[in-house]
Image 1 (cartoon, rainbow, N blue to C red):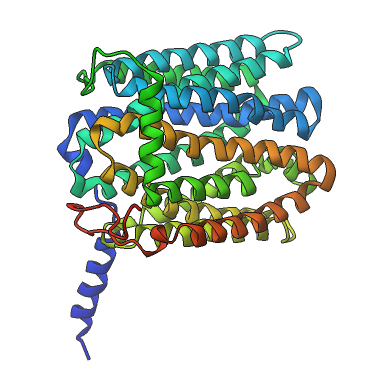
Image 2: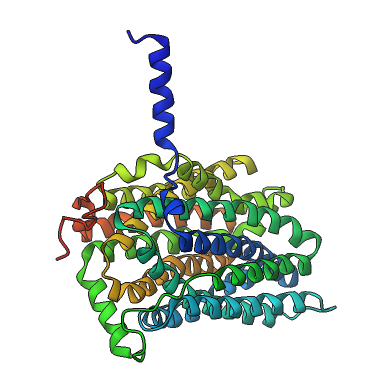
Length: 430
């Protein structure tokens, strides 16, 4: 048997291998700036993501009205996500980031001003939500397109894991803070978002310009169509998009959280409920040292998306507030696993000349699914009730993910080079 000191060293070495790989932060100054900017911006945005639905609930006491926030965000996301991808391939990406962040800042100022009125206007909340969705749709493709040029292919999985860690921090602290501030002082909650956007813009201004390969040319509809054709020709990419949309569209219940906490008799737990999935995500990213060694990225995406659906189904069935929170913690862990491996495939296999347009398509899968899911949840809850809507949505998610995997077996069978040098799925794109 190994001696105790040798066993201890082995255990310590195993724990060290689980630590996140921070190499991307060490090797790239601009990645550090971009990382810090998106982290602080996300924190404020998550405060507003709790405050705005809470304000609509206070104004209307209607789950349908809260779900409509998702509806008004959908059209800008679809239209400007594709346009933002084309813009990222022909314009200085840093400039795009700065201008879109300023646009989001103005939307938060509008929400804060409206909340300060004696009688806040519901329409203003919807208009600001649509404006913020527009800014995000134009912003994200340029940010995604910058990532691949800042970080070499062999470190893309590590970069995706670090972004996941950043996201979980914002999604834990932001909703928890937003839940408290929204109840105590809505203008202050929106003011925190305004302040974080100001800091984010200052950091983005310090980035070096990043000119696109085709800078100076016009954005054309044909360019957008070229990106769509490329995505459709890659069954592995198509599978990642469709599985993400299916998982979120059927099993994203956040629009119901203000009503769920009331039905569970614990309305003061709203902030923690919003943060629960991020806690699970954090547990994955803090032990994510194993991720770069995984070769079957597609298989991990399928299994993790199905796990998300199972956990959401359980959240609709289990009794008690804390059991529901635990289910969403587990759901968040599965969602992070899926997200990391989707990001690794996207950032390692797409040509730079198409990266902005493909990031626009990725944005649609990343944001359209939750937007549709929240709208679906709000509308279904008006008919079925809160808990049955959550449980049914999770079950539908599992079925949709399974059908997608069967229809696109390339994603399930594909293998990757764990070193990242040849990160494309070798199962074929046909």
